Image (cartoon, rainbow, N blue to C red; front, side):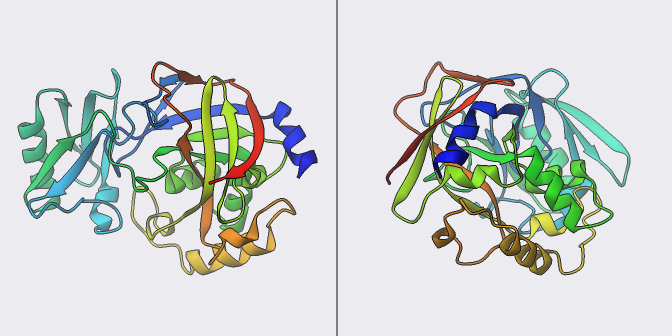
Length: 273
C-alpha cells in the first residue's frame, strides 16, 4: 500500500463536474467551492419531485434520458432541452421554479415540482455527500469492456464529480479501506475521507441520451471489475462488484475552501471510520 500512496504525488485533478439538477447532465468547471460538509457547491442543488414527494430520476424512469440540460451562464441559469421534440426553454433557477416545473411536467407527462437545497443539496449518499472520485484511466479501462462505447459515454453514465489523472486504472481504489476504516486524503486545500466504492444502479446500463440498454451491462461490468482489482483494493468493501468511483465525506468544516483543476492529491493514510 505504501508504494501506491507514494504515487499520489503524480496524481492531480483532471476534471471537475457538478450536476446542478439531480439526474440531469452536468456542468464542467475549472474551479469550485465546497460546502461545509465537503460537498461541491451547487452539486445536486435542485431536484425534481413528483407530487407524492418522490425524486424523479433515472432509477425510476428512463424518460429522463430524453432531457438535456445546458448551463450557459453558471448553475443557476439552465436551458432544458426535449431531445425528441427538439424544443427548449431557458429558466433562471433562482426565481422561475413554477414555470420550469410546468415545462418539466409537460415533458414527463405527470405533475412535478422543483425543490432547492443550497446548503446540503440532494446527494444519493447523505452519509458521504462529498464528491465522488474516479480516474480517467479507470473510465478508459471500463470503456474497453463495452465496445463500441467511448470514453465520453462512459463518463456520462457514471457521473463522477472529480476525475483524476492517475498512473494506473483503479488507482483511486486506494482511497478507501476495509469496513470500519476510511482513507484520509487532501485534494488541494480540501480535506476528505474516502469511505467506500460507489454502488451503481440501473442508470449506467443505459445510453445517456437514447436510454438504449446495453445488453448484460451490469453482469459484464461485475466480472471485469472483479478480474481487474488491483492489489491495493480493500476487497472487504465488495459484497458485489458492480461498484465504481469512491464516495467521500469532508473532514471538519470546509467552508471557504476550493478545488480546482490541477490540484494535487496527498494521501494521509488509513484511519478508523
